[in-house]
Image 1 (cartoon, rainbow, N blue to C red):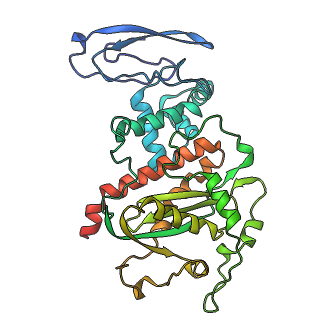
Image 2 (cartoon, rainbow, N blue to C red):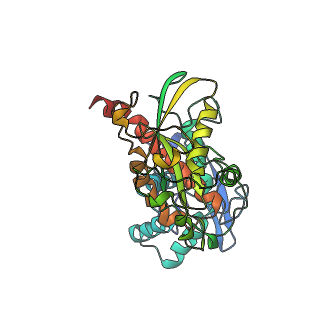
Image 3 (cartoon, rainbow, N blue to C red):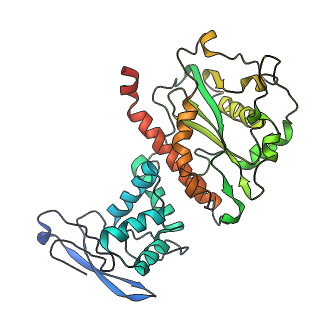
Length: 356
């Protein structure tokens, strides 16, 4: 449907995408979009403007190579930003459009079915690739590198911690494809399972330390049997840039911090980097590694408070309500996008925070 000030208007939603002045001088062509449940929709497309249609979007689980419904790209970009910054779900976004545009319940349900699942996951990953340009040059920063981190040699201060709020229900289904982000943030779960088998929790905390329950094997026995992911374990640098994350299938076992530490060292084995670890139950890990405790009593830690992961978890646990109902791949992709967004915030504001 064509109007004077817009080159398409999805009639059922009443959403407009306005053109700049001078549109009358631009070349346009007609594009027909068909849907099995509605008549064909003719759309007037301006060839000189940013594409208004996301032709890679399929409906529901349909492959993106066979699009059935048109979407406004600015509208989808708005949803991506709202989902990452405000943790808005697809359902919440569709209901917002319902009250803003006076949609019927049937229209909201149709919109939700068109967006949820593969469609919005595809677009969110496209949005990441467009911003990071990793497809153009793989050597560019994909958002996982802290600008204040030592590049070749120096001290690398990281904080470790677990979060038991980022669960996933077994009943939420299985994934057909691998996560778009691969292991950009979350490590391969098979490697972690091997580490769990090779590091039994047989150590006890020192006499001077209280029996911290998060590291106790009893924690895993108290987890709900309906969960296949009982939480997450992660690492961030002292500037709170996300580094590495693990899906936990049991309690906060020693294998998780040991695996993360070994992997961080392996990734930087060709550099002269000295790893300094801050962990709230380091007394338990001390039976495997030589770790002292207070950062105020050790050289090289500066004023690092060691609570960076707690602040990161505070942001990430807001996604738990949505991700616990997702398939494994969709869950990892959304959490990875959230971590990349959090890192982008920290990287952008790093100059301001260090100047204070």
